[in-house]
Image (cartoon, rainbow, N blue to C red; front, side, top):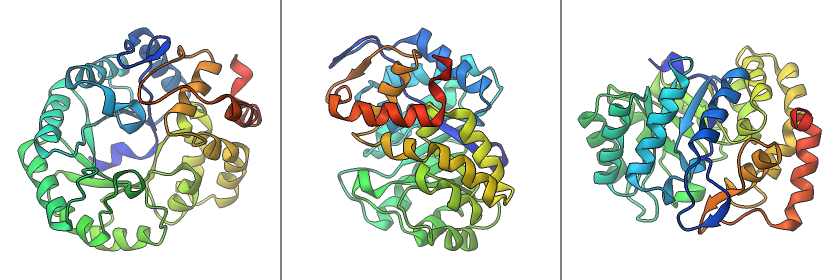
Length: 301
């Protein structure tokens, strides 16, 4: 099963109608358009309603409707992974059940945030969900946003659970690649959660990236992943050089603020998001604009 989830997997934004409000309406037409944009540009899989998809400000009903719509639009052409993590085990369990019913191919579960569980708490949290819902599940470790670091030995324990098939690692520590691969086996999926280090991660044996940059440069990310996974260091580096400024510029403010501004600049979505996130500050717009120009993604505009 894990073989289906390699390469460039976009952490897709959730389009909203124009305006920054507490309850900006979801834009279903734009979401369908984004799916086709990614299919056309050879994105290898779509992650719906991850943290880049503003999962924290969507209701559970909206969350699962986004998953259903993405599954419907994709029509089996690439895998769909649903973000279903939460800091409540009960909520994560409910979202995972709902995503499975909606037709997702797998779920991505971030470590519980803010409440800072122990490593034993993480094992119990993820084991309960995996044993309750048969869908393939990918762990997500991003301590910079959750204040919780899932250690490699904890990942190795969880890899023994049949339907926990991989991990999205976003610690910035590339030395973990070899350790997790050694302890979890060749078939355990290793995905990067940081675009800037994804090339090196894959050259060291990683299987792909769940990417923010792929929102605006999907073909480049697909090609980079192909070359890096094939061991073509020079070819991957040449692509990365062209889009390297994007990796940085897309985090000038909290994700997905810059990504949504870029997609609006590319005329793919309206200028909408939900508070407490706000639209990209004027002072950051020239730098992101320059990165988009360098990457060549504004040629379609």
